[in-house]
Length: 72
Image 1 (cartoon, one colour):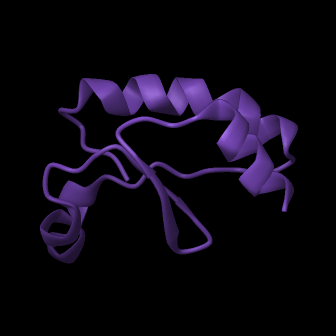
Image 2 (image 1 turned 180 degrees about the horizontal axis):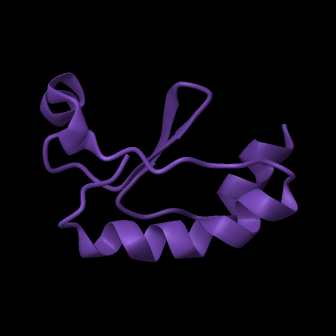
């Protein structure tokens, strides 16, 4: 979950891209401001990494933890 005006969102997307790719997975950037319900749910809590519908990380992502979760 991202927001167009969020500088950290781009940084986190670039950070996790190689980890996601090496796990053979893909990811989608969802701008919370395109959906009023998402905007209310996430507010200023972006970036948020969601895996299979469950929130995995907010603001910062641990690379090793992400790799382990994607390997499951």
